[in-house]
Length: 384
Length: 95
Ligand SMILES: Cc1cc2nc3c(=O)[nH]c(=O)nc-3n(C[C@H](O)[C@H](O)[C@H](O)COP(=O)(O)OP(=O)(O)OC[C@H]3O[C@@H](n4cnc5c(N)ncnc54)[C@H](O)[C@@H]3O)c2cc1C
Ligand code: SF4
Image (cartoon, rainbow over all chains, first blue to last red; front, side, top):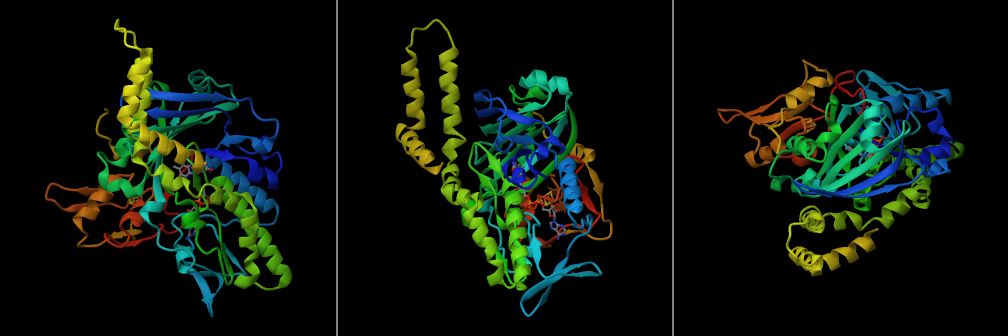
């Protein structure tokens, strides 16, 4: 599963113009970011016409529609797609990975590319992935809620092919690290939240309850009113950034996508699919090179690491290496949403008392702590 | 505030192929209660429960295969965690 937004650039490199043919939902043209607390919500709302350059666009996707299309594309190029099989183990000889085991079957291979997601049991078996820490992981829960195309257009101010992406900090994740998300699909919306697992001992309610309360928030409830639940899903998100990236190659094996921790949460956007696609491409290039050289040991396969290093994948992970620490700050999910919402409330409330707005603003700023604001603001600017 | 969430209703909408023969997640018999509390709060499917007799209940049918319990309590409360065998488990029809 995923949250819902695919940044097109990496797939655009491999299949130019893919979105004209692929089952994508809507092109994202509306961006919203909110600070939310129990009773209020303050939103920054940005709209941009879809970029002329298809590589600069992003689309909402439903993976169960999108992935089979992609698999078919790969099959057209000669790949063999065998779904519904669990790989149980790796074939190892003299410390080299030589294939995979699935039930009674064995499949020998010169090289295995592990792309088995964040819970990479196979990556652990290969000695690449270490035990995952709750500090590096969040859990995401999501509902797909059916609404008609027209309801979505009306409620989100969209046209048929265009849609919105929305992230919300504060009460959705029980005022702890994480946040809510909402993406518009063609005839449904993906509504969910992520929650940083290291804070699980200090929650006031369970994670499914958080989602339920988020849905009942006075600002969200009318948006999903009359909608029908189609699916409830959940998955862990690797959010450790650069700090959790494992060893990428060993003899006969490479690791890609979430299995290698290649995922980025920078607060205003969550990205993993574009990194997974790019790492898959780099792995394929490295394997082709290794095949030409007739050598599949880790030295030869380390071309993969080099390719990743030179691509946006590692560059972005390096660029945002401070963000996980910056985002792990309870003020961002507690004091600041309260502060922003109180300020907005005062700004828009007329009650017959002549209090200067600047005075009430100052009070709210003081409550959150002016030093904290400056410190966090400075950290924030440096983290992105 | 909303009502108390009923995850069973939500799971009822999903499509599951339950492997009646084999549990893909096994709990330790003497799982530490503090750890279990984490699982009760975290499991998106709400599959970890304490019953009226203070016994820990866990049903792997309905598992969303997210991996949360594995990451939180893989060593402390779980005996084993794996994906269900091929063709079993949750089938996401939207994703
Ligand atoms: C709630 C949530 C919101 C997100 N939002 C976004 C977003 O908006 N945009 C974005 O770009 N990214 C987002 N991400 C991240 C993104 O979903 C992942 O980065 C991406 O799916 C990783 O792709 P992957 O192919 O590496 O792993 P996965 O998509 O996890 O695929 C791994 C596959 O391997 C299978 N598998 C595992 N073990 C075995 C085995 N032993 N045998 C056979 N098969 C196996 C799994 O069943 C799974 O199908 C989000 C993630 C979550 C959970
Ligand atoms: S994998 Fe996820 S859904 Fe399944 S039991 Fe563990 S926490 Fe619950």
